[in-house]
Length: 482
Figure (tube, rainbow, N blue to C red):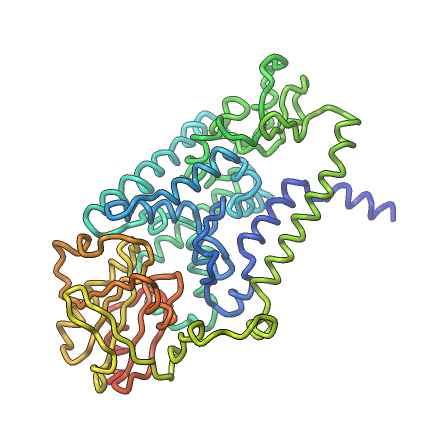
């Protein structure tokens, strides 16, 4: 027993490590997504989590704030980015880079990689200089490039597309490694190969350099770093007690110049090492942790236990709610009304119910008018980069196969002037706007765009899936639908 206690005392995870594990699991509570090979598309998916966590991860239950910011900037020519900017300000001004140190799955992964037994590279003037690179990436790939392409009507979330290791690891590999998505491996090209190489290089760097991605490349950390001095939560320095001995800078693995600056992730290592007890972990004026002994620690024990119990209850509820089998949920929920159960007949092998929609050119598209023809339904949005990229594929397809019927449906509920966005383009496609979302619901379209449905001449669904298509895939589906 004594040996067990001794082992546990030596290996017991810190409070910060437990919080990191907790938040990573909470962000990715849809665990059954890994078993199904599909991402979660429920109502909360549009909400941003604080840390870097890919939207396309099969287990992710929320959106990535960095990806949301890029998409918002990419769509800024047609709609303002009030929600995303507001959420990032909320996170930054309340938590700052505490998010990086305590609530980011990518931060946790980097720290675990750094634990591998290899020689380590210490911080230096060079690493301090390299810490500015992430601010350049924030300005260039997250703001400038998406903004430039926004006014060219071709949205481009550049950092997500070309660099983001979370997207490659959690999103791409998380989906592609499932057997159900094996048919998509043939669609991969040089872009995926390049991103995979970037991921491997970043992972290798993290083995030798503490949090290499976080320190040098992460634009989200840069954004929070700009607000960290104003943040409510974090480590704070009592300047009156500080003797500038340099111990805090020496023990900190990040490239800080002083406690609580833009590079500080508030990990708390310096709090217990400060010889003058001048550093505290605070929420506003409330001291959460310092070197004060005895009474303060005892007073906080009950609060910590209560907070831990509430956190575990929240996590348990999330895991049950996101992973409970659908049949169990339906058994405990009231029966749907007829209006709630309209979205039927959209599964592969079933006939899609007839519908009609007003076109932007003043005509009407009625599905039953196209019996005997292959029908392609493309659900897209102006702010969706992959959607815009594949519109020319559908335009070329329409010109090559005039016997097929096409409908390009703008499926976003966000109010914007689609006609103004399309002005100056020459797609030649029949466009419509699903203003109230009812047609998207009938088609079985979730929050992930683009989404494509293909029907044969009888109106039977032969393809119904989110995600991008290629010209080759469109041709294959056309031949199958004839």
